[in-house]
Amino acid sequence: MSVDPGPRERIVRSALELIGTQGVSGTGMREVVGHAGAPRGSLQHYFPQGKEQLVREALALAGRTAVGSVERVREGGTSFRPSDVLDVMVAAWRRWLTDSDYALGCPAVASMADVGAAAPALRAAVEDVFAVWQGAIEGALRDAGLSPARAAVWGSVLLSALEGAIVLSRARRSLAPLEAIRAELAPVVDAQVAAAG
Amino acid sequence: MSVDPGPRERIVRSALELIGTQGVSGTGMREVVGHAGAPRGSLQHYFPQGKEQLVREALALAGRTAVGSVERVREGGTSFRPSDVLDVMVAAWRRWLTDSDYALGCPAVASMADVGAAAPALRAAVEDVFAVWQGAIEGALRDAGLSPARAAVWGSVLLSALEGAIVLSRARRSLAPLEAIRAELAPVVDAQVAAAG
Image (cartoon, rainbow over the protein chains, first blue to last red):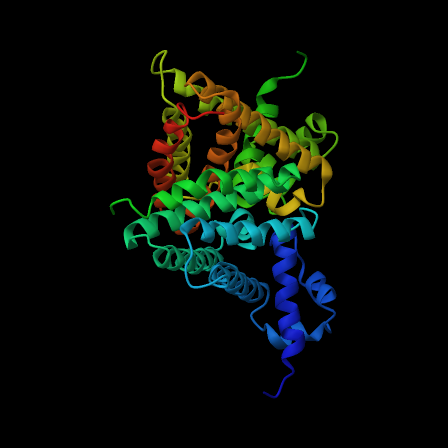
């Protein structure tokens, strides 16, 4: 490649973190460049289509990060339970919330909340993040023994519960909402293995 | 009262709707006044502390609206099940999502997503909305037969699941995520009646 991939990657990562913390409308392009320690001119160079392009790339990175956090369920060995999938999702967010002192939230939720309804391309990008993430959850649930139909429904239920709990935990500055979904839904998702569907 | 309550109330309602649709950062004070059909000068008159005051009042209205939607569970008669509480929560959002063509989301989530982490007074206001709303859910779950401890935990779980499902439904422009939490969590919350706690 003729250009150094360093600053571009740093800019996308900074956009991801700032959007997750303060939304899309609240995040200025100059702030992203400053946060990334990148030269101002690099924005036009790497993101000629402007802020929307940068937000879409940040959301794509969020999707890959979310998939990576789900894939950790396989680290412990070859066999795992459906509730282990929930556990790794919760573990990742427990860490992100505490490491950021509850400042960081989900960038997909933030993007949907402040620009998604008015910007079709960004709404579609948020939909893609959720689809990619839910796809990883579904795949892991199937590997843990759920039927495809049960895995599809519970992929959606677990993702909904996780996303809502992240917002509640940030608002309360407490992990209690996150721990509540883990404790209450773990036995229920495990029970789906035997369920018809 | 010496002032007409009409325009003030309309301004708060417009702020609620605009924040739920496009977040706090994306909503300008002039836009709120225009949406409410109120004279520009009424902002300074009714909200001398500015945008933060208006956002806090909009969030307080959101809390009262949420409580009202939960209280509808009592309309059908004197006896109801825990899953009826979930049903009225889902029914309210099914209507708001479809009536707005998926533009409207929860203003508490929007406020947390774009300004909550940086503005302590607004984060506290969001926490209050969730506390008031969850309190209403807990009270209804207790009336439906759950122990106080089970009602507290499931108030949090149902609120998390609902909030996440609203975001997913908006992103997908589909009620499927909302219907999934209703279908899957209804039997589970009903089973909490018999559970120890």
